[in-house]
Each structure stands twice: as C-alpha cells, then as structure tokens.
Length: 247
Figure 1 (spheres, one colour):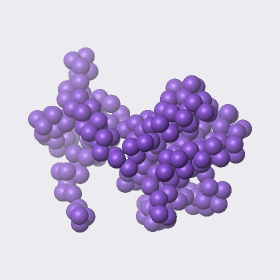
Figure 2 (cartoon, rainbow, N blue to C red; figure 1 turned 90 degrees about the horizontal axis):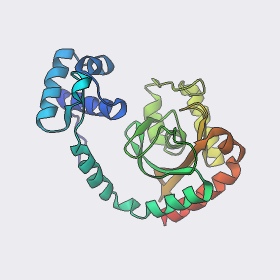
Figure 3 (cartoon, rainbow, N blue to C red; figure 1 turned 90 degrees about the vertical axis):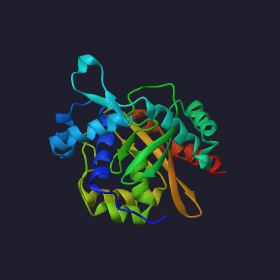
Figure 4 (tube, rainbow, N blue to C red; figure 1 turned 180 degrees about the vertical axis):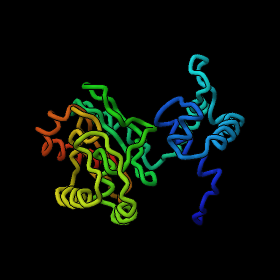
C-alpha cells in the first residue's frame, strides 16, 4: 500500500483519540488546550466521534467530559488477535514473569511511540506506566530507547524534531544525550531504564530482531533498585527468552 497523508480532520480525530487513550475523560476545552485544535473544531469533532461510537460522554458527574467508547474494548481484542506473528508471546512472557518476579512486556514500534501489545504481571509493584494498549515516547523507558538504538532509520527520523517529553529528572530529553545513549545501548545489547519514566521504577529491555530488522522489544519492569543491581543477569535471561519468542 502507498503512504497516504491523512487530511486535517482525520489527523485531528487521531490526535483526540490518542489523547483520550492516554489521559482518560476530558472536556472539549481540555482537549483543545492539549491538542492545539480550535475549541469550536473540537466540539464538532467530538460530536462526530460520538455519532460513530468512538467516544462517548463520561459519567454525569464529570460534566461535559468525554471518554473512549467501550467499543474500543472489542476493537482492541480484534487487533490483538490479528497480531499472528506474536501468537506464542503470552507463554514466553509468563515464563519471564515467573522466572524474574518482574512484569514482562512485549512492545512494538508505533510511529514515534512504543506501544505495549502484551504483558504478564510480575509479583512486585503495580506502578508501571506501560501496559497493553498504552504507549510511551521513544526517549523514555526501555522499549522506546531500544528502538532508537537498534532501528537506525527510525532514530534518524525522530531525532530531527528534538521535542521530547520529560517524566522525571532522569528522563533524557535532548537529542545529543539520546544519540550517546543509543550508541551505548547498541554496544552492550540491552537498554536499562533507570527511573526515567517513574521515580523508583526501572526496566530492562532487549531488541527483537527478525532477518536483521527490529520488530519489537522484550522487557521486564519493577523496582529500579532491584533491576539496577541485577542488570547483567537479567539481560542474559531476557535475551534467552527473546530467542524463544522469535522461534
């Protein structure tokens, strides 16, 4: 299929849906502020999205706020079933979670984001930002920085804009630092996320390569101190699991 540039209405609709997926219920005014779309356009766009059951009014107590329609639950299930290349992933993720006690993630590149498509809950904390259906920017977290390290064309493209969100005082938010980080991670073969998304939380990820092309990241997340102290051992165990995942 040829690449088609979306028109402005579709681009704005995508921005609104992505925002609601990250932030939950919002008012049209809040959507306009967050997206930069004119408020009058947001009202018309929200009405259109409600009419096709992609968003819906939130609870009455929430005033004029809207949220993603429950229809997305069915759409998400259908999308997950369509990921046939990862059909055996859940078993591997559960093995990793049982082996390490950490939450295991399968994450794939999604434009300029890293999107989690499957996980297996570990026995530790439940303060992790990433979970199925959620995304993080490429400058923060093990998966996104893994994609910058092991996908040169993607890195070259996203490094051009240089506008990076900051989550903690350890988030890498300038292109020069991210380039150095990518070189370091590529040399050692894995990525350590050390409180750069959530204070006290860390992750470690290894690339998933098929025929020399990066197709995803297998990572584990939990308390930063535990991951930091065991990173070499964890890297070997996650790498072995990655080999099983790729078959």
